[in-house]
Amino acid sequence: MKVLVATGQTQGTRRNDYHWAVESELVRIGEVCRKDRDDPDGGCGCGRGFAGLNSHRATTTARVADVPLTPDDYVEALRSSLHQQGWDPSHARDEAEDLADLAVHWPVGTVLERRLDLLSRRTLPSGLPT
Image 1 (tube, rainbow, N blue to C red):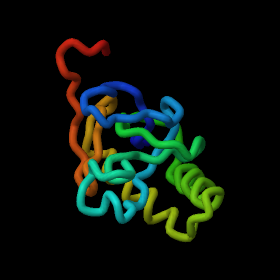
Image 2 (image 1 turned 180 degrees about the vertical axis):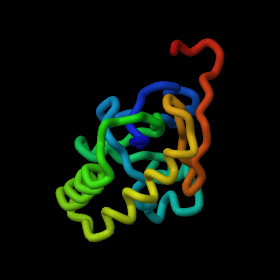
Image 3 (image 1 turned 90 degrees about the horizontal axis):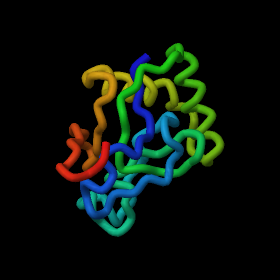
Image 4 (image 1 turned 45 degrees about the vertical axis):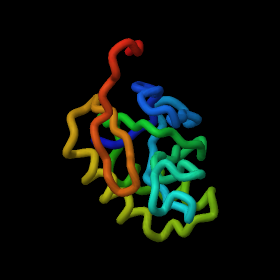
């Protein structure tokens, strides 16, 4: 199944990149706070981040990966993470379907960045190691 996972690849492309998630853990697109609602470069960083399901830490880059999960496994991973963090887990199935719909449109290995509701391919600037 194609999903989004945390990656440190292409970190440093933007001056405000961060990577606190665990490499290759499943990620979701979290809610955006008031500071970042109109500006992904706002004071919080949530408007440009992907949230790690296991570590509950975030990263500004996600990679499309083909992971051996069933759709039900994916829903359970999201449900469990949401529950652990105190969020309402009743929407886990819808969120899993939405995330899978996003991932399916990109080739495996593509690194993505988030700018509020926009996902785009992240390219590696010259001079940075791969």
